[in-house]
Image (cartoon, rainbow, N blue to C red; front, side, top):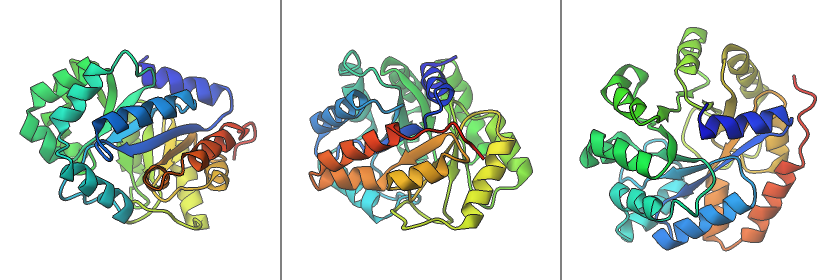
Length: 263
């Protein structure tokens, strides 16, 4: 069992929702990235998803896209991010997940990417623009370093595809709640909830809902049918707006949620 799997299992067994915040690496600089990671780990989040800035972020909404532009303007690259994580790894005690589009990984080189991820104690990677059918070009290389790929399913994924992806997902299955890009939503339809119930019943690994989640009430509602959430755009906004007190209040509210009664 990996460190990521262990931490998720601990939360699930305590009937508490898994919380994985997303941050954009290099937004504010790499020193600021480390500070944010430390702040989040001290607040007790389950794991942290670290986004790598890219010029064509097809899955990202405007908030994360702007954060990526700010990071790129500071000269942030995948290599620099991983080197910084390696440098600071003794301070970083929370499971870390890298989210990168495939192009920066190919530019770095598959072997070098896997090696640097291992040195940085990266637990898993998310590559949103690499279809499952094409993952054999990199998954065996990652597996030699003990690193898995977190699979994404959408509201249009068939039962057969959900089953296949779930069986090949490391740590958790990422259930996308919208047919679109990331960003804050005011509410979610009953169809979204029904789809999460469907995915959860099919998956042998924990299911986390992501895209659009921004309030503790939404987390509470989602955690009635899945094991937790990934929160991205709202986390990025809180940091960018200097509203860390609001961010920490949100984390405390999520930690107070009791998942004893599940659908």
